[in-house]
Amino acid sequence: MEIATPIHAPVTSPASNLIISATTAVETQKKNRIQVSNTKKPLFFYVNLAKRYIQQHNEVELSALGMAITTVVTISEILKNNGLATEKRVLTSTVGMKDENKGKIVQKTKASFSFFLQLLS
Image 1 (tube, rainbow, N blue to C red):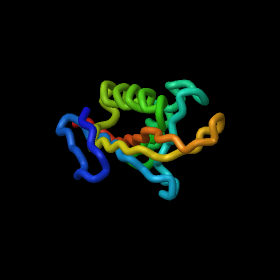
Image 2 (spheres, helix red, strand yellow):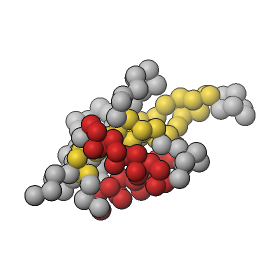
Image 3 (cartoon, rainbow, N blue to C red):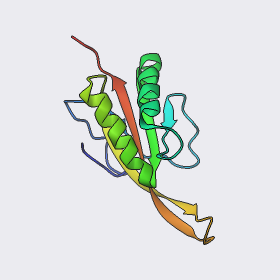
Image 4 (cartoon, helix red, strand yellow):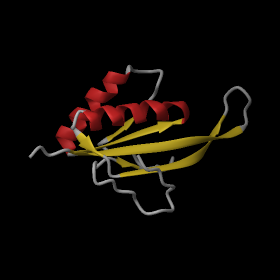
């Protein structure tokens, strides 16, 4: 899996068609975007939801902050290994968020993954 920053062109892997892109806080919610949390729902909830979005929209974008990025990577590997989706691009960024405990602005890593429907020959 290749990772690029938002200033670079999208990275495409011939073996897959998964798009992983960074998003900003002001960007509107897309109909095919799933915001993944590693504490709110089980892993396979997101896997099954991503499968459904791929069937409905032929594309899904998984978005995560901080520690949830590993969950998104796991979901992407499951989709790719099952032949359900292919990787197109991976982008990461950092966003400033207010720490509720300390009241300070802290930088968190943000990543979004987008997948395309894998067509079977």
